[in-house]
Amino acid sequence: MYQALLISYGLISLAVIVLILLQQGKGADAGASFGGGASGTIFGSAGSGNFLSKMTAILATVFFVISIMIGNINSHRHNVTQGKFDDLSSTAEQIQQQKLEIPAVENKNSDIPQ
Image (tube, rainbow, N blue to C red; front, side, top):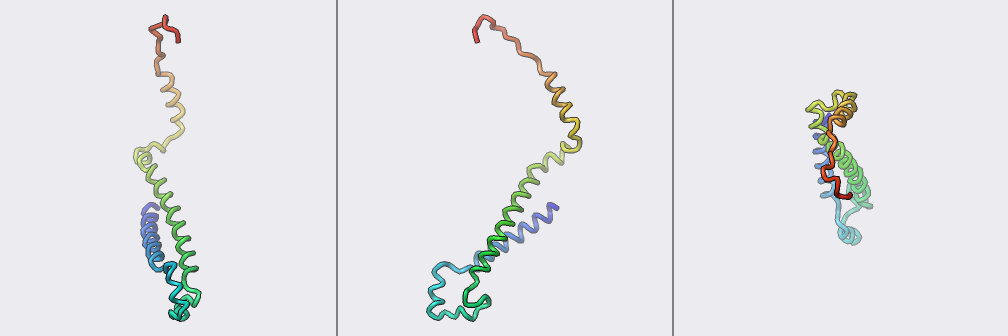
């Protein structure tokens, strides 16, 4: 699953880059109003802004979700390789045992007020 996430992460990042580079700037609409030939394009005379903007937003959202998933997997990967998640039932017993082994601290300076 981790490998599939990494591959899809790379493909989505490339798709977002391509979609961003395909979009027109804000000043590009002025040329179309003076007969720039925008009516003969694939997306029609309205332009591709709406379609490309929506696709960019969707792919950017998926990109960030996959980023969080990969980060979460990587943060727990060290614990899994060490076997820390194998038996969680003994963890509570180990904590209680460690609390019992902690020695009490004696106050050697009893004449100093606290």
